[in-house]
Image 1 (tube, rainbow, N blue to C red):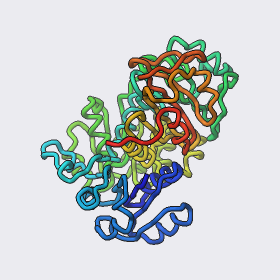
Image 2: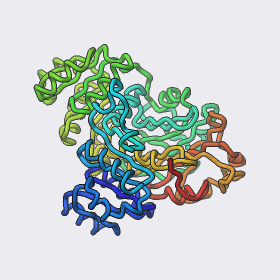
Image 3: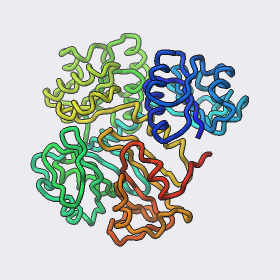
Length: 455
């Protein structure tokens, strides 16, 4: 597929890397020549230096033959214009725009994205805030993703006193078979652990599993995480993500004991006017007095969303020492992923990974129901609908499990997660949940239906 990516910032880089390793033909447009030179030295792709909203620049990038354009420049208006020109001048079938300003999503204004020929609008900050909120609502969870039907993908640490300690994966899944649980992945000391029925769990392991949503709490409790309501939350950083999170928590009725710390005076004033139930505190989150004003000693969760990874890490560690039950750190640099596993930060939020996953879900239609880019040690979580033409029809789970480079984590039939047994046959209409190393999507997809489907 011919794809043009406009803007090579953090999200653009992530998307380029992902799609390149899937074998797509890529053209990348950016105003920074040095960034593009570095990209060309690492991958075989075309680059064009220039402003992506220029028809001449789009033409140089091969817009006349493109199947998809993804507009990820820093400007919302430029991204919208790129999609408009891509449709009207070059007839590119699928057009995706990143929009950061909440102004354009305000429901009191008439929708105009259709008139601008934007097929899909991605709001990175909102998606990141939604991810954080899902984790806040599920105490103990490192990751929480809704899958087809009643299935969820959840990650949690194996704590001291965990019922699963020294038990094999085979015996755990058998003991909890009434909950249709499947252990999908294990990360130990920052490294992925190869799983088979004889693998055992240790204290500190990150355990990722697929389970029926109504039984999720039972599995978390078995891993050593008592289910306690998260009442008191402190947010550090009132930028777009912090504001979106506070707004979502107010809408969910979770703002009775919500504090938001913002050091910029103008932004703090804006937040105080825009948020109805949140206590907005103007000050530096590193300041002991400011933390005391936010009542940090009684906080159930601390969410650090400042613009600096290092500050978010330090704040998470400091508040953890103060007795905060769960800490969340916004991290843009993947280099910190393995380090943080040893430091005690409970939940790492990577907005680039979240945005990449969201974009990929909108690119693929048809049999591909969802695809999530997880941490490097885990790979990609995907779900496929089984069609009549799928090669996988009548495959048994036992046969699927022999396929290398993937792990079958669940089968949803008629909306319900069903027990995975070797002799279970895949039927038309099933949703199959698979975890595979990054870059293996095309190989997994061949089992279902070859090719990609569009709007």
